[in-house]
Image (cartoon, rainbow, N blue to C red; front, side):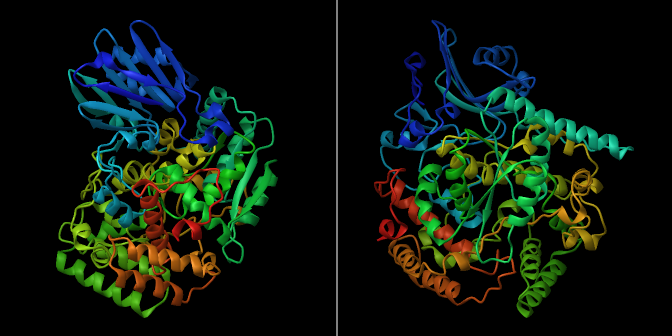
Length: 612
């Protein structure tokens, strides 16, 4: 889809549909992208994706009727849709994004014309100059994702979840209805069994409504064997009458293997198991991943991109459990630390941080690295300023580290901030950790990257746990049912007490030893082990790129090669694996979208040849 409209002459609207810049779209399941398009003498209406009203499939004209009646009605629309409506009578354009994605709409203004498309690459030929937007690149290097609506291309923006863009009287305006979509109303309850029944009923209805609207021939789920993907499979198996294809990423040679948990759960609920090995050979797919996402992306998306390629042979509809950790308060240890630190004077907070730094340096334990990182956030004079952004630097580059690795012209700029940033304060901290991570973190990070990856192979990606009805239910539970236990339990993220209510729900179907959860981490030290030549090419390319300090690049790569890592240990902070993948992602992106390197999605070019 590509459109343009003159702000001086709205009747000039030109809207093209079924525009594909990627040949793969034509080869895959095109139904995932087939738009609904209606046109008459009064209006033009386009719907991309799946539009729901009252949990039933809806049409563009139905949505437009609600839109014209009242802005309040927008909260009634749901699904993974983008609605574009032009009204000839009022000479106005409305573009409404769904509440969960920022993947369907890019826009820019050139010569007083609004240009827009579902793909950023379709806008690039119309720009007067193709320049990197360094504040957004800084945002990515700090966090591994871009919180802002500003893309890494100067002048091009994305439409954030729940945003409503209007063009009227020569002006482009942005509104949003996030406050109507996300509501917290925690209340005590008495009967746990009836509450669990309600949870399951809402979960099943959420899946059922979506599948009735989509009508896929086969159904695929991502399955790690953890809390969220297991519960998804359990509930989907009650709604879907045929075996569900379950795809799991496996890292050969690493002690943390999800395969046995996932395979056991898959077979228990009648699924078809598809283990997908990820090894050093799959590193070449990072070019295709970034070409598909059209921006630098976190390295952890690469195994899922590999998996998506295989899953697309079976379906145009894939589901995942992502978002569950966010909604169930994955950062509750940070919230518990804040519960005490908010009362301390700055001097005490700084002394505590120094103590955790000594503790980290005296031990090789990853948890001490995490503790020191969190304590450092509260050692600032204004500890609430850009809190989520600073918290999410743990895998990547702190502001101090960025000063060392980037040239001054780059590092001295401010990183891009979202126009819908959730503000933290002393009184809303625990709830802001959930809402902020969802809106400013999850939707701009995992949801964005994985959705674009799945879309690239012709699949629509559905995440039941973050749909409104389920969010409303979880947000009605008392905090002690989100995460229980003592201060000690919460500080160490004890698996015996976190996600308390959800574990009760899982216990209806799984034994205690089958209820398993940990974050999705990747052993980059093993994956790069036999790709030394590629690693050196990446080092040379980054040193040649004028954005980075060559000596610091050498330090990072040399340290990564010499770091002694244990195969049974999660490696998020102290290892440079994720940092090198972030740097490599920036270099690949720059070659594709700034240097304009030629790449076709159906080619088999190696990373070595691409970097040479």
